[in-house]
Amino acid sequence: MGEKDGKLQAAVISPQQNEDQMELELAIPKTLRTEFNFLKFPFFDLAKDSGRTKIKIEERVSTKEGSFHILWLVTRDVEGQFPGDFEKRLHRAIEQIINATPKPVTNPLRLGSLRYIARLMGINGSGKNLSDIQRAFDNIVTASIKAEGTFQLKDAKNKRYIKDTFHLYDRVIQKGEKLPDGAGADCIYLMLGSWYLQNINANYVVPLDWRYYNQLTGSITTRMYEYLSINFYAALQRGQKYHEARYARLCDYFPLTRQYPGWKARKQLKHAHTSLKQTEYFAKVEWLDTTEADDWLIRYWIGPRAMEEYERNKVEIRQMGTMARPVPIPERRRRPQIAAGRQSDRNAPGIVEGLVARGLTPEVAQALFEGHSEAYIVHKIEVLDFLQEQKSSMIAKNPAGFLRKSIEVDYADPSDFIPKAERERLAQKAEEHKQKQEWQRKVDNYKNWLESKPEHKVYWALHQWQKRYQEEHGSGPSAEDVRQQQSLLISELPSNEQKQIEIFGEVVFKPNGLELLEPIMTRT
Image 1 (cartoon, rainbow, N blue to C red):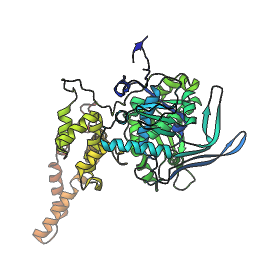
Image 2 (cartoon, rainbow, N blue to C red):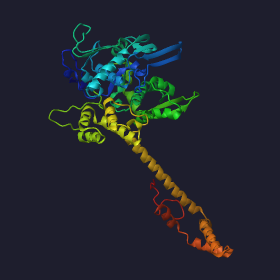
Image 3 (cartoon, helix red, strand yellow):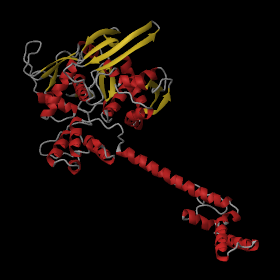
Image 4 (cartoon, one colour):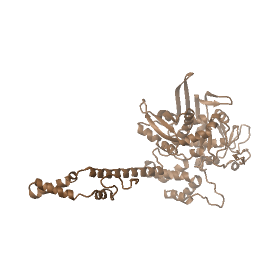
């Protein structure tokens, strides 16, 4: 790859070049362009080991032309597994190669080695991982899509809906097998589905902020970003400041298993909502009641980050212009490149020691460090620490084994996970609230003191005196005795300043009122 006029030029890879030459190391770009339909409609299951056999969206849509039946149906092979988060990561790696390939992209697409694909996925090239990649390819190839009125096909002139059953990938050609032209494959090649490939070459793609995408954690969070990226654009085109959808519809389009009652549904989306709100992708989220039982209208108010993304990409989306700038390994999961004879400038001792302190052997800790980014490992450690604080049964038997596996295969974050920084912020906020309540209690106490008559201030002390007098003398005190004792108790009452010291530990108000000595002082 070279530079010309300040723009990145895609490297043209010939079949004769070896795999090391093909493994492009490019500057991290801002954008990954992904095919529209497979971003809008769900193809990958978000749940781990859910046993899902299909994803089905079936609706009756009313337009000016009439009412139409639409269908999006993804089914797995009877002997395979439904494509899940691992397969989605594999597909994002393939999209990186597609983005770096000069147009038009043609079948078969040269991928390189399994180890190279593993690197693009952000995982190491262990035997298990390479076997998992092979299995993931099989799961994607054998999964079929049946579309009626949902999949839009774009050509040079227009867009149209197709009614067909098809595949995202048609075939994987292994090294040594024959290519369509009869030549032997020098590495792995992929036959992309014809409809998918046509849309790629027609630039029917959606630009995603790739750096931001890889900062997000959790499969629900990234899927929510994908879903909203399309719908926020449409809302802004209509001049709206928010996008709203029923919870049931979100579950269909993510896909997710619907949760009941409402607190469970909110918990299910809590991490995604917190992450996207904190990063200002949306400004706020509202849960509105509907007439349907156990369904809510969720309103997402568009945030500054989404608006900036809209302004940056609207011309390209509107015109579906030329796909530009190849896409590299994601920054969050990037394998470190260390020059020979030179130590990495990353904090190797701190990360490795953190892994060892949580039960991993030094050898395993070092291998994990070399295969993943520092931020990625720190996040996984943070999740483990959170689960230990919660005394979760997920890690009860083998916390170290859980941590190792979560790094190697990128377990999704628990639905109730809250990042450490956010937990500390919430704890600080709770402590500040507690201190404010305590301050207000003291102020109310002092206010009552100011507003009470002297007779009321000594009432309880006088009552106790009368009780003791009765016990000592066998009869109650006379009215004159009571009056004299009351006068004595009133004379012994503390001054307002003394009462402030008793309540607050210091004098904070001016005499005879609630005006602070320092009007601008903040009491927390």
